[in-house]
Length: 395
Image 1 (cartoon, rainbow, N blue to C red):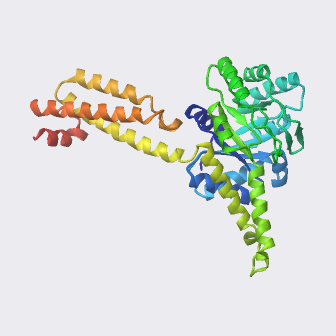
Image 2 (cartoon, rainbow, N blue to C red; image 1 turned 180 degrees about the vertical axis):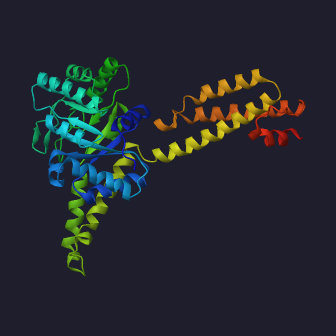
Image 3 (cartoon, helix red, strand yellow; image 1 turned 45 degrees about the horizontal axis):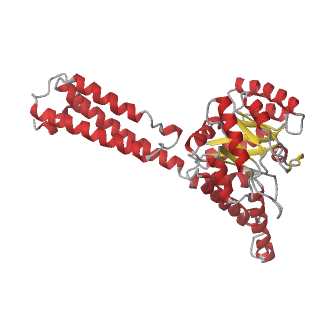
């Protein structure tokens, strides 16, 4: 089972310059499609559950259990966080108590001071239970399960004040809306996002994760620019719903539902579920979270090889009595390797790992040359490395 806390995977995305998709689920089939897509793309993911979806599914505990059980039965190996989407005050508490691993409090319909006050209370509640909290400033346009926003540009001062409450990520209105975008939509206010991100980064002292709601239908180039400016979590709901609806509609219009036993709901809904999966895969690739876990595995394996080479060289030098060179070489290379943390994403660049490999090979070559011209290994040589030392030294 790979259910994880949402904070870590979103902060990793912010640090590494990509975004995590938060895909809304509505039922079992929807959840299966999202999980399969994440697994195929080796991508961390958030499965989002709105208040309305939780009610439809049978409650927060039922939604959490469904996601958890499917994660296990489908043998999912990528990190999956269970996220409450647009929850009111009580919903945040109920979801967290039910086992959700991330939650959003949407107080945008309140006066800002009330929103701020309620957020502070929920930050304490969530953090006492080690769960991250998302908040919102500047209402997102459109309607999300009864919460209606006219759409506005978030105040930078309000964003800074909200960040000071200790929240873990922040949704800020930048011209985005829920549902379909009208033909006269003017696009995301990217320059405003850039300024807002800079202000929040200053007050928090780090690259603070920002959230883009209503991302269905936003052009890919704008999404990628938003990620560049600090968006680390992107919510998708309408896009998957439209794909599901169109696929099922095409199935019915073509009278395929009348063929054989296609009245069976498993067959009747199959094309729609596949459309959801394809949509999620497409968004994952745009967000840049695809192949993250595969890359981490490759880097982890590389680091294991490098570490083994370092220890071999150190062992040879220690066996020959050259403890200074052994310690000095190990310190330099391990200092370089400390910049690589496989669990937090990919290295900043390939140059770092290439440098580590190059220096390690030099270190190993030096230790090999030294051992050839030195005396035979002493009895103090570590047993594990003794055969290797003897082979290299020619003894």
